[in-house]
Length: 495
Image (cartoon, rainbow, N blue to C red; front, side, top):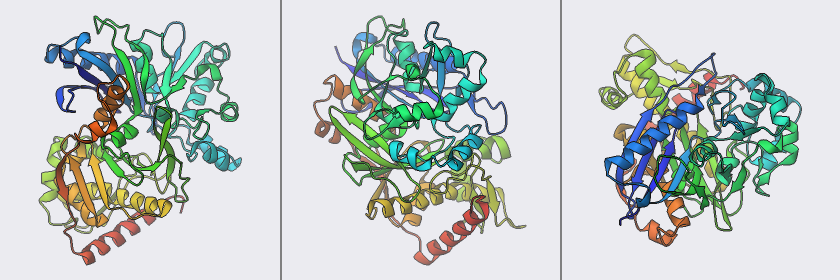
């Protein structure tokens, strides 16, 4: 009987299930979008039960589409939107509030108060993170402070917290297993990345009972077995990694200095920094990449909050395209940006600026500006933000980037990838399998159960689809960079 690995890729806007074979090739894919909830400006929520139901339905669709069942699945790997926070009743499994999404800014003022109280160095030294509403800790605290009865239940040990990986495993095992892995734990602002444990001082600072927290495991081991009716037989759940760390692994960036960028809802640039954390001097994050066996790998990360979602905004907000796939053709219909720069700070600015109050802005509009110029400027804004992070990363690590591996939905946009190579002055490499996030989770699960023999076995499967090399005149590039720098300067509120 042929065996496969099932990867669950629970993202910000959709849930997916992908079945991989032993060659790392996709055998089946199912995807389902779910509701984005915006209760107030700057607030972003999801319904945890809808996250689960959408994930369950795509699992069923993917496995039935190729006529397999639980006996054919060697293991399940899970990768997920990170930082998104779910709190539920330990006895009933019922969420006490909607999931507060990583993009949500409701705790920005509380974060400001922490900075004023001088907590920045404490939090950074322990977690590798800067104080920001992005991370889970302030979201958990908000739920405990604002949901009637939540604080008391938490103090009585009756509530559980989880990032989305933890929630899915709880549901898959019917409440038997409450775990996360080091990569997701390192995104909560509550996890000590040096001791690899929940930090008691930080839990006390945020007033979060330790009983709420999941057990932290490695990224590749058997955590438990499915108990759900989705599978007639128990299937081992054996791999977990936050989506960006999973993509780093799926891209086989397993050596120090290797860099990848995922162009999804946001953009996330990660560099493998090896077995020691590099603490950034340039406003990047230090995070755990993964733990396999006793070996921990760390990464430097730059987070861009708005990337692919700017294309959704062009579609849904401005209405200048009918579908996201049209943006490349529209942008390519003009030879350049016509002097227009689009800083897509639609949910604040992430690394390396970290301005949570910045608003999106479009500069350089004239009578000659068309929808095509705005579309092109939106795509270029993604590449410029990536450039800012690469520059910071090179300073922190003391190395010069030789190549950038890319993945995610927008990496299929050839115009954007060519512009990225031009503006960075380095090669941009797109792999044959761009499902690297799901593939990374599959590889971690497969390694845990012996489906793949070794890392070397997996590395042999990675192949190049297309390499983009710099083609633009350097003088033009320098002018573009100056225009972007000016647009950023005008946008920042914390300058």
